[in-house]
Length: 243
Length: 243
Image (cartoon, rainbow over all chains, first blue to last red; front, side, top):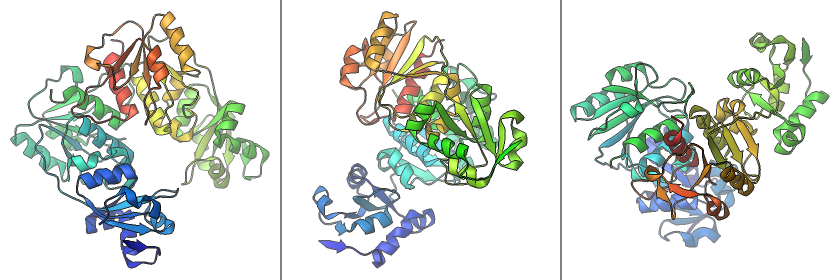
């Protein structure tokens, strides 16, 4: 059983870069904290290395576990309080066919993004397309909010305009959420293949994407108030999950 | 126009205690940050004093504004980055009659609580009853997540068991959300007066409260996954808002 106790260890230095998006992108790796999430990562065969305190090592498979000091774990953790275990994971493609797709345009809050992914698994929206300016799925706060859902989804990042055109050719009804010139959700008819576009927390969906969509819809509210994007997307996913 | 530039000013020392729940409870005051939220607090006639940088004072009514130094604002702010304005607000009772009520049992995350309150305003659930162990509504993160909704709602904190009995006597159908022994949401019939109980992020609604409710319901999901409590409550509020 390997052991790392120094924060000056060359592997620790390398791993600590994964706290920054740029290096996660380059290395195609990310860090997962908390037992429950590490177990989900193991089920998805993403785990490269597990680092944990001596007293935690019995919890995980032996061959990838390295015992680490509290100091090493704290250096690699995004949390303020003491971390007892974490896993270095490989990003993995997870291609899925799905009749329900989410397109996320410039979502900025990692907590919102994570909650959306968690809800997507529950309502069987298996494919998620992120705009290039969306926040990072592999951000620690996002991963935590997913509760492990990110390991179960087909998540891609690309130009949404092109993607909308492709989806329309493939027979998807592409629906943008917007407050103006949109029909109430209750009047929207379900089709076999549907893709929904949700927008930035402040600005909503970009006009150029709204123009490309087949339809626009809005959630009816009692008073003119606004909904959090994770809440709005959940209501729509619930209403349009495949029966 | 008054001016405060020293963090040793006695009023600043007094206000800084409002960062802690115990003192907010004692003083019946709380702090609101960000222009938008201060304006919402002004509309609700909650504002006692506004503190802001010299360049921001034109934004607010004159008689309650005190110019403050950056150092003073930072001392009173929960944020890491520089705060330009904040308001000391009075807690106010805001009694409302409502045919739709939420009972929140031991919600611990202030972001979740704030998002639930924001959604409640949109779907006209005007009365919110918090259990005694719920996190504080006047926590800065919660206030921010409400987007100002907390100024529009009747929010009380009390023992939920007693409250459920009272609501039943008043003719409310009290529905607990639970995974076991519960009927799918789609089978739940709307009544004139409804109250829904949502539970803690990890444990759900306490058994003793489930036992007191008239009915239990659950949200149908594709696979056995879990939903964030702000998401689950939003789906149910959308489905059962008064038409």
